[in-house]
Length: 500
Image (tube, rainbow, N blue to C red; front, side):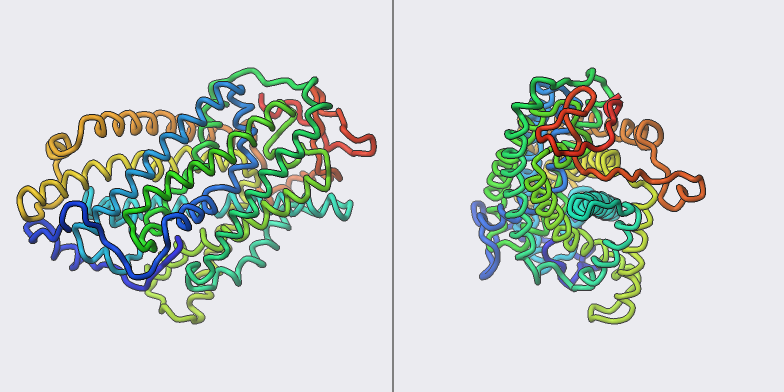
């Protein structure tokens, strides 16, 4: 969330503009404008900074799980779907600003307000819960991934093993002061830097994999295609492109919110240009020797650790943004003052403690990433935008026709006032989300509980389970994961059953 204003629409303000109120729809072709705000091009870059980063290191793994051609086809389909739903979500918020003047002012939770105008008060609560769970779990995934990168940096530069579980705690402590800031709108530059670091990381991944290609590609193998792996990859794909929870808030900060559709097309065009080459090169160079992260497969240590630093910087900058809406939601729930005070410090410290505790409980970012992508992100990025657009559009058209707002549109209104092609495309998208997201969620839960189960950090010491003391951060290539590009390179311990 890029702007968290202090105002919020009360229940009474909702009721005053419910069924029977006089419609205040802007004339056809006219949209709400602000004197100041983000332009559509800069907004597109903001969206790229929010989307790209954490998912990019896991994307090659997902393409290996699905075989190259099926994986690329599935990724392209998902990119088309999320671009379509971003377009719908952008148009939906534009309709809210066109029809209800209160949304032309500061709105704290625009996605939840979209749910309210589409389906009523109960949907507001549900959307708010789903968005908060998404932000919370994304924070956990990013802390796990950043901690793994930092552990690899320590191993590569200092030659000794430092406990991953301890790194998670230290990172949480270091991030805590940044979460005390009131709003990330005060440091918008963080998102721009995040986009720049990710772009540089993509270029270095392609260069590093290209250097290794000559040595590794002749020994490249792919794992047997499994249905569960396909669904896990689907969760990874959705996580990598599913930033829709923040889109209405970013759009709300625009000078002309109606231009967000341009920003969405620009952003997903850039993301596609980043993701496809990275995933394809990683697949062609390393095959199934590549594991959770493509970074560790790159055998030129200088390039590997430069990527590590760039992605870690991106994750840390993004975490300052991810935490903010969650913290503000909790502060509103407990009626904590908007000014800096001890209550804010206590609550935000508590949130960080819970995030770190969950990270210590599930110390493997890959399956958790798949779980978030298959569950809450499927709702916010695929299913909700289609439903909300159709209902809000029907409500707006009925307002124009009748001259007043009759409240939430009925299903008959949705069919009557929406074009057949929109209804058909939205219905197919929702079915895809329900089936694919459900299967991905089930597969991820099964993966966490069985195949990739790891004991929590606070349980392992009591079971005499010592954390691995592998002193290499590089996963070598080949069927036995022992082929080196450089003679003096030390390979990490092999895991030839990673995809089984």
